[in-house]
Amino acid sequence: MKKAVSNQKRTGKATPEEMPRARILLVDDDERNLLALSEVLKPIADVVTAPSGRLALRELLRDDFAVILLDVFMPEMDGYETASLIRKRPQTSRIPIIFLSAVNKETEHLMRGYAMGAVDYVFKPVDPIVLKSKVAVFVDLFQLRQQVAVRAQVERELEQQLVQSRKTEALGQLTGGVAHDFNNLLAAVLGGLRLIEGRVELGVREQRIFEHMRHAAENGVELVRRLMAFARKQELSPVAIEPEKLCDTVSGLVDHALGEALSVDWDVKPQGLHLFADEAQLELALVNLLINARDAMTDGGKISVGIEEVAQPDDLSTPEGAPHWLRISVCDQGPGIPPELIERVTEPFFTTKGPGKGTGLGLSMVAGFVEQSGGLFRIVSETGSGTQVHMTFPATKGATSDEVAPVQTDERTSLVGSVLVVDDDDGVRMVVSEQLRDLGLDVSEAENAERALALLQNGEAAEFLLTDFSMPGMDGLSLLMAVRGRWPKMRGAIMTGNPKGKLATCDPQIPVIHKPIDMGELKRLLAVA
Image 1 (spheres, one colour):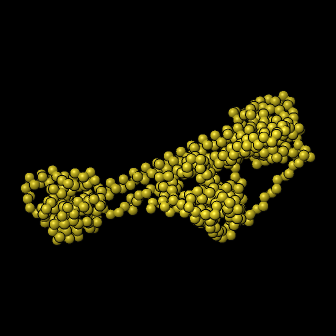
Image 2 (cartoon, rainbow, N blue to C red):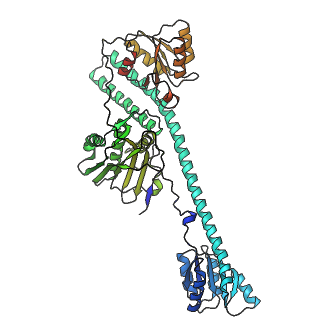
């Protein structure tokens, strides 16, 4: 069975320091010569002996040798014939051959030996020091060649890792950009549907069609969220999470989906520690892994989930305030993942499932979430022996903090009277503006920051500025800063479908609302302070 490990620095070859000793093939029909020469040569290499040419050829099929010491005169197959066969095989044609001979020291025999591919011709009785020095040269050359080959293999694999890393980074950037644009489309679609729902009385059939449309749009929002997770651009709100509570919550979510043929064995050993991550995203990641395990175990079985304290992973530097680590492991009993696919399973849209059975975003989303959380994601799989997925997160000894309930608004809540909406996307700007007008507000619109500033300078009345973040020219954050400098009493908020980047370091007092916009959240922002 071949075990594959994803996202690890591995070469698959021994390092130069770990290279095995070189081997010498010694061929002679006289056992006394074999014994004596073996004693001379074993300090510099491992010696393999063969009493005949036929057995020597068999040894050459099993191993690679630094040099061959070949007696010339042997029964059945002599040294010249053996050398000729060695030179004809591509696998052995480059192995140096040193002929050993006690007779026929004439020049014609020497020339015949060199013609057969010998690199040297040594006469018996052999001087041990001379022979050892000659053989040592070829042993050193062999080991140097092996080291060069290993280094070349290491460099090739490092290059492949670099290419994969750059490919993933490029995919992340592309995915984040596509998700941002898609968010704008969904903001317009969902906002328009809400407008229709509030303004038009629908019949039963129309209501069913309407609900299908809304469901499709909400599925799009979920898809965008997964794309953002892969691109490491989703907004996370990490809190201390009690491991036992996490298991109880996720167990309740997946029990109905796993079926009767599968069971989950939960083994929680948190040692008083709490996971530090975004609770909703962690629950979703764990559900994803359990569903993947279910799909891999078509004949049923047991899925093992463990949570335990581990040492800091070597690939990570300890973030401030997180000296402890907890690892969540999900192990299935499925067929495993082939080694050639192990590095690809976290690529977006890559799936080993059949058509229509997977989007290829589940594992990419989980890997993106874990790494964005400052953790480490690993997959270990052995063909025929299942798959282990490990998520390692920072941990804290702090207790789980209760969420602060958001301020509720109702029909009697007083809102600001006028809003300036700024967005370069015509569809989003129109839909948001209409939703605000339905709330009874005076709304003015601008397609970019420069137009918004011009309207305000010309006396446009606005108590609140609602601006998109990513726009050509001046972005929304710069616009809010400019407005604060000129009109300090005007409140404002930023709309965005991409919370990372410059926005992540902006003034925490600036409210941020994410597309598609939740009207309840927007009304809370517009409430009179």
